[in-house]
Length: 452
Image 1 (cartoon, rainbow, N blue to C red):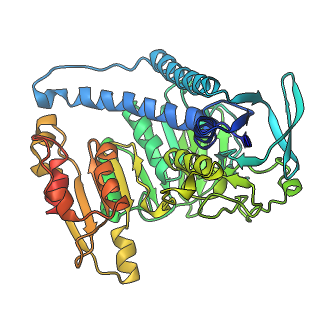
Image 2 (cartoon, one colour; image 1 turned 180 degrees about the vertical axis):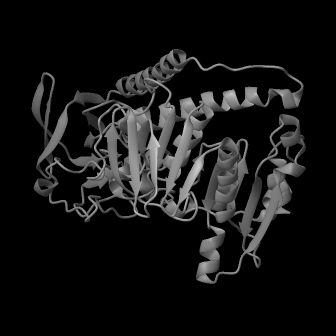
Image 3 (tube, rainbow, N blue to C red; image 1 turned 120 degrees about the vertical axis):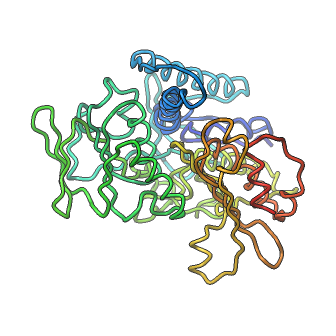
């Protein structure tokens, strides 16, 4: 019997679940109120990384003299905006075309539960109740906005409103030093803005390896970024074209623009979850088990609303696992998601990436580990590329040699971490990496050295 599968939300979790389930024979309906492909993905992740890539090319041009070249780079803000918009449109179209080619029914509108098996959809030209055997809630998240931050869409912005920017800020104050905050600091400092970063802890990236954070902080200082460590923003005021950020320790920043990068909140309000029998946590997340099932046996949740790692890669994998589970594929070889083995990257310069067990967490728990660290300064390819910043760190079990985790700071870290991620996911040993015959010269050689 064909299963009727209803998905609320067309982001990475929703569209992946839809395409896989349709391929496996389900009758799939997908509801999206904003943008097929996901607002967080296409309006946050993609444009920010596109602008970061532009900033990186500018930085490469500025370093060109170190490679025997003379070059000057000038920013064309209009061309940047057009390029970002073009990438968004192309990705949106590709996702929508894929869904349609798989026979997925697309409904544009807002979804509200009527009962555990029925959802009402209201949108342009749409007002109907859709019944389903199985439902997935994958509605994503939105930027968190505190009461003391009066957004105006002009000078005081959330991350989602700030790219492509109408103009490059003269002096930008970024509030929040997590992943998004440091990426925006890197992005706008590379594009020529003076940047002040409000850091509530004593290091940027407070949840990351201190050695990793130190490399990034040094790079920011070299760029002229002002770091306000141990300061928590408490108020934002505006006078004309000046925005003043006041902190709890009395320090303040007078800037031309402010960007809030202090996390996100799940889009679970307004869904009528109580009609479906679903209860959220205090933070608004929908609890799930290892199969992404909620407390209601036929309703799944995935992506940012599930309260797991807020990564597009994780959301996509959740979507695939959900589709396989509802179609019975889990009765065959099926590996449950292990969120502690998810690789993540931060697209600053240099890039930062990590996976698995962190060194600080191992020491905090008293676990014995072996830590090996190799600087890129000894890597031939890094020297050839003129960018020897950073290092590779591999964490392993001293008794078995099993790879437990690792972190990388440097050019191409987001790609290089995949090698360690495969090792961590498949319980490989350091010898499996060290004995691999890798390309020379290549940045990946430092992985083999760190695994030796």
